[in-house]
Length: 447
Image (cartoon, rainbow, N blue to C red; front, top):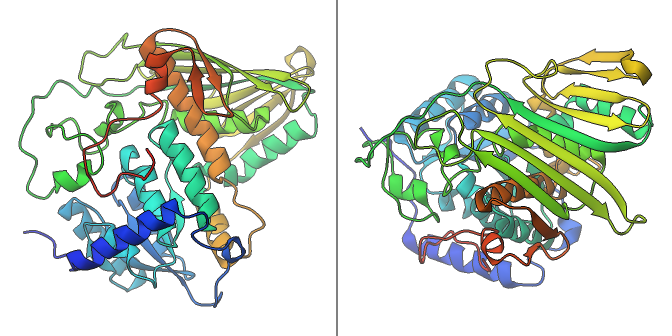
C-alpha cells in the first residue's frame, strides 16, 4: 500500500520554482542582516527532513527528541521508509509530521525555517540551493556537493541568501577533536607541514546486477532527480549508490571525507590545492562499483597570501582491509617539526613528541548532538559561528572531487583554486561538473 502524502498543487510548485530561479539570479535574495535571526527564539524551530534512510534516520531520531525542534515534514521517495520515519517521529515526540515525496512541498511552506538534507550525494547541492533560495536554513550531509561546479553555486547561494548552512562533518563539533586542533594551533608539535588521512576498512562486494524494474514502494524517477536517466538496478539502492559516478563520490566521499576534513582543518589550509596526483583503481572487488577500492592521493597546497607557504596532504584508501591502520580504522595524522598527532575522528587521539614519546592521549566518540546544537543555535542567532560552514565543507569536498578526477584521467593535474579550474587539461576540466537530465526542475541555475 502506498503511503499517503500531503497534496500540493502543480501551480504552487511552479510558482515556487519561478521564485527560486529568480532568487538564484538576483544579486541578493535575502538581506545579510537576517542571518540567524528569528522573531521568536523561544518557540521550537520548525524543520523539514529531506531523506530519512540510513544517516537520515539517525538525524531524525535525535532531532525528534529535541524540545527546541518541531519536525513538521518528512520527505522520502521510498514510501516504506517514509512510513517508518513518520511512525518514529510520532513515537518519540508524540507529533506526526506531514509525509511528502517531493521536497518542494516543504519549501513552499513559509512556516518551515530550516531543512536537513540527508539524500544521496547527487541531490545534496540541488536540494540545498533550492532550500536556501526559498529562505530556509540548511543542514546538508557530506559531501556538500556532487562536483566542484555545484559546490561553487552552493557557496554563492549561501552568500546571497543570508541563511546558515551546516555541513554534516560532525567531527568539527566533537569535543576531543576540537581539543586536538587546539593543540596543533598552540604549537604542541611545532610547525605542521604535512597531514595525512586514511580510510582503511573492509567493505562488501555489490556484485553484478542487470537492469530491473524498481520496487513498487520506490518513486525511482523522483530518486533520480537531476541525474541522468539510467535504469534501476538492485545494487543501486539503498546506500549502494555511493559507488556509481552519477550518484555518489566513492568511499573517499563517504567515510573518507570526514578524515579529509579533519586533516585539512589541522593543516590550517584555507583554499584548494594547486597540484594533485592520485592513483586509484579496483584491485580487489570484481563487481559493478565504478570508483576505486584502492586509492592514494598526494596534494600540494600553496598559500600565495602567506609568503607562498607550502604544505602537503596525503590520502590513503583501502576498502578491502580487515584491519586498522595506526590504531584507527579511519583517521588523520599531523606531522610537525617537534612531534606528531594520530587521530581517529570517532575514537580519540595520541600526541607524540621527539623520539616518538607519547606525551598526551584522549579518547572519545563522535558527537552528532553537538553538531545539531551548533546549527540550531546559529538559526536562533545564539552561535558565534557554524562549526562546519560552507567554506570548510566545500574545501573537503573539493579534495574528494579532485582526487577522483586525477584517478579517472590517470595523471597529475594542476588546479587553480581561485578560479576553480584545472589548467591545461580539457578532459580533467570537464569533470569539474556533471551531465544532467535535460529540463529537470531541480537543476541549479548556472551549471
